[in-house]
Amino acid sequence: MGPQDRPRFVTAGALMLLTAGLATYAGATVAGMGLHRSTWAALPFGLFYATVIFFLDRSVLLTSRTYRYRRDGTVRPGRSGPATAVRIFVAVCAALLVGESLLLRIFAPSIEPRVTQLRQEDLGRALRGWDANQRDEQQALAADLTTRQHALDTAHNLVTGKTAEVNCQLTGGGTCLPGEGPVYRIKLAELGAATAAVTAATRERNTAQSRLDDFEHSRDTRRARFRDQQAGVVDAADDLLIREKAFWRLTTADPSVLLWRLVLTLLLLGVDLGPLTFRRTLEQTELGRRERLAQWRARGAEEVDAQQIGQTTRHRVRLARTLADHGAERYGQSVRRREEITASVRTAADLADADVGREEIRIDRDTRIRDLRTRYRVPGPAQPADEGAAPPG
Image (cartoon, rainbow, N blue to C red; front, side, top):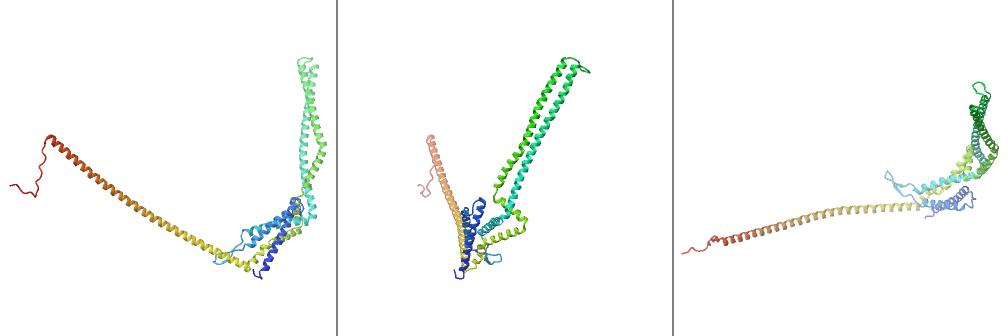
């Protein structure tokens, strides 16, 4: 490394350490707010997050962009790798989380009234739901009481009618027969049944009225108990979500808060991406150029080796195919020659067998002729005279 390049690498290392320090505070703050712990208690989370950020920055700074062929035939440095994309994604998420956590602490006095307002709204919604449920139940009890009262009135009317009929049968008059006869006893039994129905309807009406009265008397007590229970639940919801809702309500109400949120988020994002933005400066150093050239030479040598290996492999494949074709041809010739030799041997054997068969036939024929001549005393054929012998006398 040359003396003129050393300050650049020192600056890059300092930026990495500053980013790691910011990541430590960010991780501890966000973990403390999310887990309801102090920042010191959540410091291990911040150290773990800072370690991840430090090694991501280190991998990005140590990975130099290699040369690439362009469409116009020129050679230029290529694009950034996947490690850079992961680092940018982490930086954006971290900037949003850290910015929100810092702003929540900065604007905590202004956020607290809106948190209280949100809690009251949640409590009001719960009470309105409870009141609606109780109103429906009260209406059901009132309707039941009305039904029981209507049944009681009907029973009273029936008793009145049956009493008039009994009196008519007892005193006579109109279509009624006087005296305590069978009709009178029937009407008297109907009057007793109607009186019993009035007693049962009265008891059911009183029971329905008692249920309604008890419900109305205990409603305020139950509502107060439910309100205290829901107030405890709402007050216990002191998490990051409700504070974020209150902060968003404050942001929509005051545009200056939105400006502060944007400025602080962009500032944290710029600080977090400091090592990545300084990476281009490191690529312009002599060391960076040597690394790119070394990678380019290694890549070229690798491509040459791959081409040579591919050419050798293709040549071997062609040679193997040629040898296989020649071997197959020679094997075919040897097979044909073996078949020809086998055919000739079989032909000679067949011819020899034919000669032997003819000779056996001739010998058998001569033997039979000789036996026939001997049996029937037939003289044999005259022997032909030798051509070279002299005539007699």
